[in-house]
Length: 627
Image: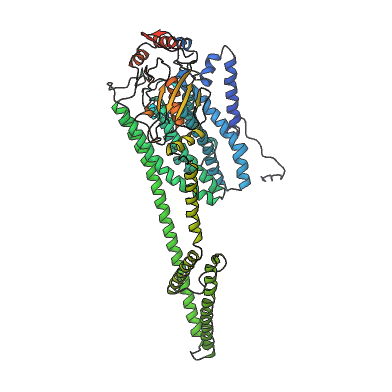
C-alpha cells in the first residue's frame, strides 16, 4: 500500500477534544472556564455556600461584638481546613496568569531573539520567576511597612502566638502556597524534560515546605522577612540569566557577581535571623506540647526542629553553590592548561619545520642567503635604537607642557621588549614629572599666597562688621536631611516653630483608627546636640489614658531608649509614635494600670479611653479633652 504524500498547503489536524494533547494546548482556557463557573456559583444562592470558600478567605476570628465596639477594627483571620479550597482556586489562577505571560510576553521575546529550544525553555523559566519574585518583593516590603517590622523589629516575635492574621498577611501566604503548587502542574503542562525534573522538584518542594510550615505554626511574620531576603537574591539571579540569554554579557557579568555576594550574605542572614528569633528572642513557655487551640508552637522540640531544618536547607544550598564554582574554576584551569599545551606544540612544530627547511637548503654561514638574513637583523636593531631616541624628546615635551601624550603616542616604543629598558624609561619619566612640578610651584607662588590673603581678608571683614557666620552643627545637618526626606500621612502633622532652631519640633497625631480614633494629640520633640547618636526627647502635651504614655506625658517607645541607632531617622520616630495609637503594647507599659486593664477587660479599657478623650474623670484622674 502506497503512503499518501502530504500536501504542501494541508493544515495539521487538531487533536481530539478529550485527548491529552488538546488539554495541554488549551489548558489555560480550560482552567479559565472552571474559575468562571466558580465565580458564577457565588451569585446563585443555592451554590453560594460551596463557591465562597474557593474565592473568599475563611476562618474569620473577628466577632460581631468586636466590630460593633470598634467599627474601624481590622478583620482578622486564622487558618483552617477550608483554606485548601482557596489554594486550589488560586493555583488555577496562577496557571492562567502563567500562560498569559508566556503567550503574550515571553514567546514574542524568544521569537525576536532567535533562541535555541533549550535556551527558550530556560529563558521562559527565568522570566516567569522574575515576575513572581518582583510581586513577592513588593508585597513583602508592603507587609513589613504595614506591620512596622522595620521600625519595631521585636514585633517578629513579641506576643507570640500570632494566630490572628490581617487580610493582606493571610492572602500573601495563600498565594505563596498556590504558586508553588501550580509549579508541579507546569512540569506537565510545559513538557519539561525528564533530566530537569529533579532540580525543579527539589527547588519547588523546599519552597513549598518552608511556606507551609511557617503558615501552620503561626510564624508568618518571620516568613515575610525571610521571603523578602530570598526574593532579592532570586531576582538578581534570574535577571542575570535573562541578560545572559539575551547576549548582554557585560550586564550579566555584573549581575552574576552581585548574585555571588548577595547569595552568601542571604544564607548566613537567614540562618542567623531564624536562630536568634527561635532560640534567643522567643522566650520559652511552660507548655511542653503543642497547644492547637491557641496555635502555640513555642516548644523546645518544635523550635529546634525548625531551626535545624533551616540550617540544613541553607547549608545544602551553600554547598551546591560552592561546588558549582569550584567545578567551574577547575574546568577553566584545565582549559587554560590545554590551550598552553597546544600553543607549545605548535611552537615546537614550527621550530622543527624551520630547522628542517634550513638543513634542506644546504647553505653555510658564509653563503649569500645567510648574509642577507644577518643584514636584515642588523637593520632591525638599528631601527629600534633610532626609534628609542626619537621617542624621548616627544615624551618629555608633552610632560613639561602638561599634556597627555599617552593618548596619542606610546611612552615606550613597540619594539622595546627588554624589562631593563622599560624600567629605565619609567624612572626617567618620573624624574621629568617631578622636575616639571617643582618648576611650576616656583614659577607661580602667588596662588597659595592669594588663598591665605583671601582667608585673612574674610576674617578682618567679620571683625570690623561684628558679624560672624553661624556654624551649622552635625545635628542640624542631619535634622535638615531628615526633614527633607519626610513623607507623612494625613494623620501626622509636623511643625517647626522657630526656623532658626531646628532642634525643637511640634508634632500633632490624629489617629484615623484604633482606640484613640478622632482625637488630636500634640507632642513636643527636642533633639539633643549629640543627635543622631542620642535619640530625640519626646513628650505628650495633654494628659491621656494610654498604656505606653504616663500621666506626665513621658512616652515608652523602644527606639527612643535602648533600641535607638544612629541610622534611624525622624521618620522612624514619627511613625513609631503613630504606631502606639494603632497598636498599643501592653507587654512594655509605662502606665501599668491601663496595660493590666487592657489585658484583663478590653471592653472596660475601651470605655475608659473613650471617656478620657472627652475630658472626663477616669480612675480618679481628670483628663484633657482632645476631641
